[in-house]
Image 1 (cartoon, one colour):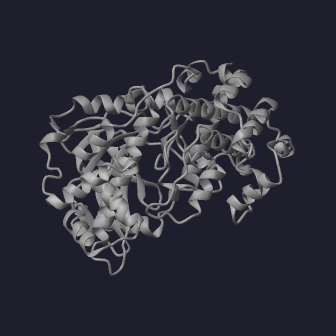
Image 2 (cartoon, one colour):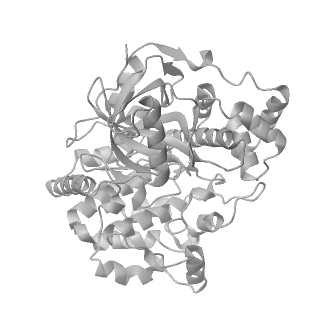
Length: 507
């Protein structure tokens, strides 16, 4: 009998987050320990030695054979031996034991100090805030249905390939098709569900360069979820292209899910959505009947998928001049974002990609933080700088993102103030309907722009005029300027934020 996900909430109604789906998955169907599944036992002795060496490297210690792939690919060292490794093992399905091992060594901590959680804010929401939240839900729904997203060429190719596969070659239209997800492993769990879950594809939601997000309906419960397909680019004339795409895709899944665990701190995962406003990946699964790598013309479609709560569009598409969002909606969202980032700081975690586009609107009008692919613990070196956008990143991190990554190159160490800059960018965008400070919108080289301004001694007080013109409330204006100091030494720290801006945090 097929299993099913329990409710994440009806469309148009507030949703309960990940607690329902995770609790349901823990009890539905029989479970198999990851230790009973096939893993890396088939590696040669030489490869095991290489993996052991790899595990001693600080920045790749978590990723096993996937880290080995990252080392060679990042350095461009596609030797004949490594191509052979990829061709032998690149077609393997994502090792669930390796995934669980990665989760198991994730640092999950919280500092002793406390601040209100997003859930506590929701519990105390006044009428004006509730109206702002409800209006955001309405605008997000209207935006999604009036301007439905259109698949890009790579996403369309992946969807058509999957449709042809599941329909037995009868159609290229994936919408309306039912896919079955097997080996469902909820985040943090060492067991895998043995019953496949039928999910009917009902809508295309969006894509990045490495994934496609679909709205799906659990056939058994009729509840909406989001299904994330993983893909990689085809490298012409490279016999190991599919293997490389699969290994790096597996690495991305490991990195993102592990980062979510770290961001959740000591909060139980099923409560992390409500208490920390995190868009938690509820589970990792495998598309039944699909090979580990399905080769297309321009992309490789991987059979590893993630399942999460179905959310609506990005805040960056809602808080725009055309929508004329009122002050109560902006202040509601600003406080929720502020409290979410404070929870990251409590966990000692840095997202590193904070901007309005990485906050997504839930069906009830609240928002969740997504896009954890570059997340790391504060004080650690950031080796995934290519995932950063210099328009939004703190200039120390942005500078590294503009340099081509190479094996052995030094990586920037993430500072506690790195995400405070990102918080400032996000709040500035929110209150100014999508604009960026310091001329970053028009800049062809954001890092050079920021460095030039810093060399001139420009301070964040220069932003006051633009904030006044945008009619940003005075208390939020003060916070934004404190967060957007170009020099780290001048930027407010966590202690200063908690004391100076306590009214915004605790009221």
